[in-house]
Length: 221
Image 1 (spheres, rainbow, N blue to C red):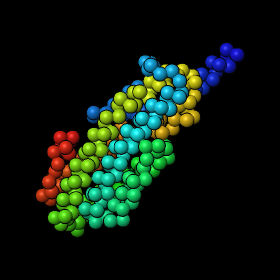
Image 2 (cartoon, rainbow, N blue to C red):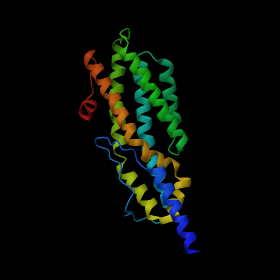
Image 3 (tube, rainbow, N blue to C red):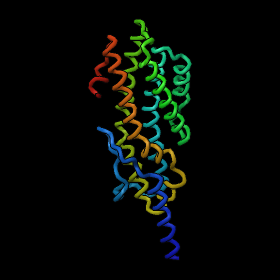
Image 4 (spheres, rainbow, N blue to C red):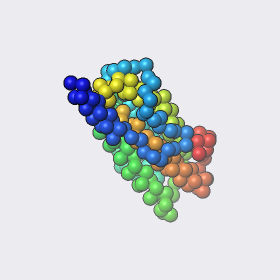
């Protein structure tokens, strides 16, 4: 029995390590805490589930901010259909989002960023006064979204502590039921890095086209 229990624990640990290993590229102002060492006060998979709910809720708040920002930016540069889809995605995203819905949101943000970038690189793209105002609003909203992502450190730490504090049982739960939390832990650094790059490019465009740049965007960069 003991050897069987040890095997189960080993398999759980291996599954957790494979699923929750964070990407190597860290982002300024955001560093994913390591999973080693435990250190939490929680002791069960149920606690990890509760911590995941809180983490997902915080992540969704940042996601919705970015989707709204991209919707404004897309509208400003003439991508009306993309703007509408981004707005709809923001409204549909809920605090109980699953791993699949979070992945779909990030994919949409990546696609939108590429389309917006193409429009910014197109010399035929001309923004009128209304478009410039909308673009400026988008810069501020995008900066706020990135700031919200950067505040996920504590929710991530709480989630990690709950998983490791649960021992083998907690790790088995993490390997099978905590997909949304694991996705957030592994994807957030790269996602923040990409969004910061998008903001930097958009701010440069704004400065070159007499578009006001909000203070929060300037200070973030």
